[in-house]
Length: 198
Image 1 (cartoon, rainbow, N blue to C red):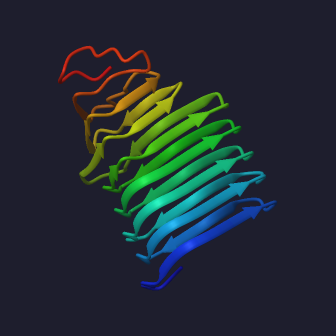
Image 2 (spheres, rainbow, N blue to C red):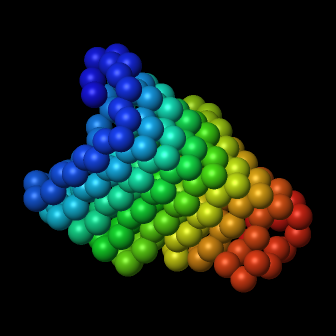
């Protein structure tokens, strides 16, 4: 989906595999309404990305399953200079050297009621936020985030706010940025404090 496309994707299953890099759905400077969409990428030598939102794409993603596996780097959802609204999204990455449930590069997504996971690699990150300048805000509410390396990795340019959610696995890494938690608990349903990240 490119060049300011504003299409509606409803009840779509998209699969990509076997190339050097594979993308289930690629939104390039486009903001489609994605509803009941399954996007899967697997088997690439380099990168596999379930849903790739690139270059000022702000899709509304509702009831979307995005998965990536088998490459060196796997990304359930990769947001690059994009700010999607993600509701009831399942984003998973597994089996590579580095796995990212959601990776945000210079992006400010809103994530609600979603399940985000990364597993099976030497580096597993639930949500990974990084930038080379600017300032960005990531909002996460009523969601489950898991990653054995870091549940949340934050660069200095990011403010990440998490409410009423579960963080399972590795500790939050601030990276010079800010992560605020309200009513957040770990995989053992333990909380370090009502406003403290586990």
